[in-house]
Image (cartoon, rainbow, N blue to C red; front, side):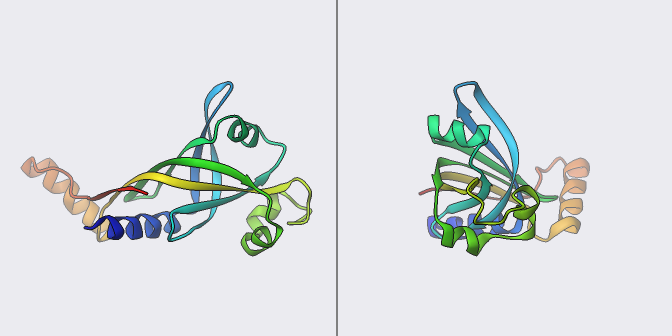
Length: 158
C-alpha cells in the first residue's frame, strides 16, 4: 500500500473506533486516560472535546507530545504527534454531542469546554480484514500450522 493509501486507511480505522487512550507527558511523567474521539480528518488531525481545567490539558501545555492508541476486536492503531488546546467555538459546536454533554453539561458555550487537536506525526495500524470470522480462521491457522497471524499492517509518517 502506498504512503497515501496507508494514511487514508489509518484515518478510516481511527474513525471506526470511538474511544482512544490519550497519553500525555507532563511534569509528573506519562499519564494515559480514555477520551471520546470526535473526529479524525484526512490530514491526520484528531479532535477531542475536554474540560480546560484538567490534568491532561495542563500536561499538553507543558509538553505537547502525545501518544494515542485505539483498539477494537480486530483492529489496533497507535499514533504519536503533537497536541494543542484549541479555542474555536464554531468547531466545538460542530463536534458537540450528547457524550460531550455528559462531561460538560453546560454545553459548548461553557467557558470550561475546549478542544484538543492532535496532529499525527507517525502512525501504525494492524487490521484483520474480514472481521471476527477471518480473525478466528487466522488464529486457527496459527495454532494448527505454525503460520503467523494474518493482519494488514501499515505505517505512516506525516
